[in-house]
Length: 130
Ligand code: FE
Image 1 (tube, rainbow, N blue to C red):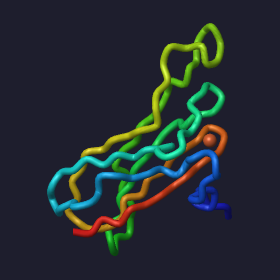
Image 2 (tube, helix red, strand yellow):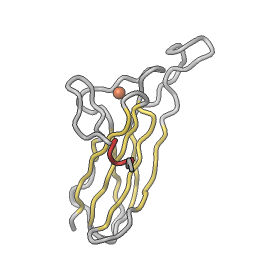
Image 3 (tube, rainbow, N blue to C red):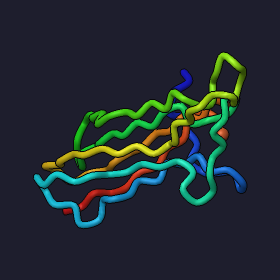
Image 4 (cartoon, protein in one colour):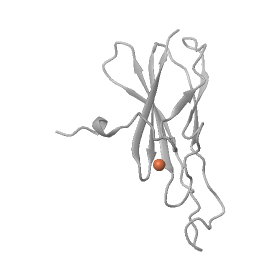
């Protein structure tokens, strides 16, 4: 049986960045709220056009020794120049940067997913240690 996880990519192309970059996790303390940002295309921008764009970013938490993963949230990027005048003629483009404010009571892993409308699913993770 094919599993969705088999189709996630973690190694990027040379000229285009898809892997989500998770930032803001250093110095995190148990039970204290903090803000994480997840960006696609931080070093090398990913295209943001009607034909080719990042559609969404999701963030999950897997506690150390836990059995189940927790979804923290999602950001959906809906505007990529679509317009009644045609593709890339619209007035608005949403950029692929998501922020989440959260609090953790256990160490574990933050795992981010991103979805490019033509290059599929990408993921990365960061260890959270108190
Ligand atoms: Fe792409």
